[in-house]
Amino acid sequence: MAAAQGQFSDHSNGTEGTGGAEGDSGPATFRSAVEALRTARLRPEIEVDPTPPPKRLAPYAYALEAAVVDGDDDLADGRLILLHDPAGHDAWQGTFRLVTLVRAELEPEMAADPLLPEVCWSWLTGALEARGLSYGEASGTVTRAGSHYFGGLAERRPATQIEIRASWTPREGRGGAPDAAAHLAAWCDLLCQIAGLPPATTGPVVGAADPGAGAGVVSLPQRRGPQVS
Image (cartoon, rainbow, N blue to C red; front, top):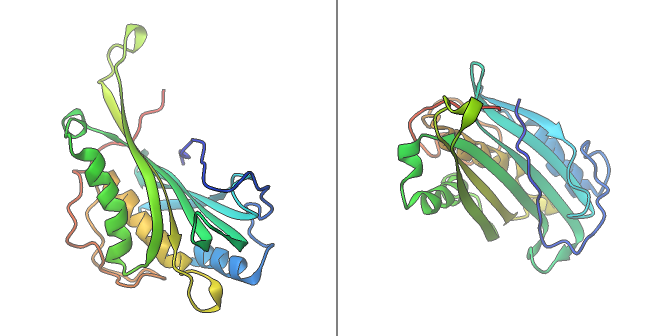
């Protein structure tokens, strides 16, 4: 699986992380949220693996990387990080924060759409709202970058990559932990949408407020994933 690469930053004041990729340490609310991420059942096109989280975003952190796979192609990939600061954080307006990087390669005609950044951001917020999830303090960027090939690579078609970097504060439920599985499911909805897959309309997803959420959302046409140099 091709893991999304990139540096994350969030309002953390340089706090050294201690949660680690395993998520077996920390307060009970953090361990509960991590267990929900581990046990969520997702669409079969999505491959998910734990990955070492950044160490300076929060006292406790857990990270996953995921890819939408079609045969040998990765149609989209990304990383989702769960942060927890038991003391709370003014910028988060809560004790948990989700941080993500999502990316996919687009066909040139899709990449030329001037409204593409706004549409991609609406996919993120729409995925959360379609599953009935409450969240706050959402922020992020949508970036598209084009590549043209020359010399020995001149036979390659021009490529454009879209990248979404975002963070939001999930609403904390009973016991202080957010519904991490539902937020993961919504994030996977975003991954599938940016990959060009049709919405899933059958089969329950653990943690989802509405298993058929997103059925009316328009996706990009299916395409090949990012090509590795």
